[in-house]
Length: 431
Image 1: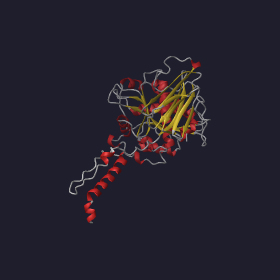
Image 2 (image 1 turned 30 degrees about the horizontal axis):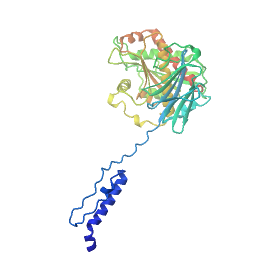
Image 3 (image 1 turned 90 degrees about the horizontal axis):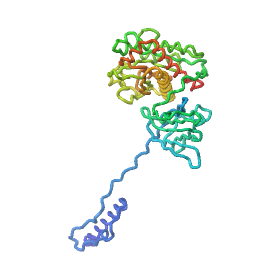
Image 4 (image 1 turned 120 degrees about the vertical axis):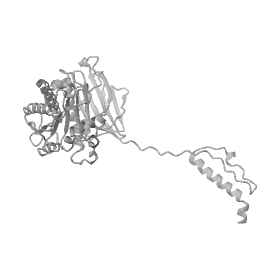
């Protein structure tokens, strides 16, 4: 013990050096050796001077890898000017484009991205994807779209949001396209003038479509400046759409209401489910505080992405705004499957594109796109379901058009062409 007390300064110095060395190793900071190994004090009463040490940086843990994005769906259509491929994504991804050396192939890649089961099925050989495009998924994971540039007049790729998607336009050289064919960032309309492809019915022998004219009876819905009521317009469009679809063989068309009666929202979904429907199309007329807003938008069920989508859902649901979104996290899994969501998105896009393509030839139509919102009427249906807002009754010009039978029939015809295009793309049914 006496020996320890006599050499205590030296022992303390050794301890200090050892601690400092450990700190330096952890911090990867270099300190000159003379400073590190300074001589210990000879006087046992002298204060021990700690070795100068560098400030130890805080160790930051590496951020967890971001979850992979998903290609939810693939869609392709052609016009006389171009062919468009659309990859629907669950979040925004920045594509990477490169040209293969000594090759005429262009590869557009989406890093950290996977394909859903339905998208993968469409990308496989024998699927609906044109032979021009090849879509692959690697283990990184990365989804890549490749196509040859030989024989093309031009091509263009860009991203769009709300919902996020990658768009690739290609124009073949023989088409002699106009100079503006790739300048429009809006989705190209499908070729609706082509003969409708025959429908291969599902195993039950027919395809059942339920048309749901919004509101009715005591529920008049939105009201226009000239007191036009939404419930009357939706019924007229629904009846006209029913007449068009009923002419197709192997189609069974049902309506949640075919006259001016009130039907609860839950009963509409139960009606479609009880009749084993393959598609559910709800027809509504929009409204906005500004009388200048007009146009078309189509919804499928989901969480509202913006305030206005939530307001539209609250109005159509007849519920307060602050309670409209409640219940999204409590959805029953077997009622809202991934397949239903993807099919509903596909149906919504096809119907919306058809409406814009057909209606814009005769009327000034604004395209408000495809959106998601928690509509009660779509929530409990077990089949692909959409809600089409065909116009803004609050806009005086569109209210005037909605009162014209010709316009009502044109709206129905545009929806009809979209539905038929969706069914034809499915080939063997929708379920």
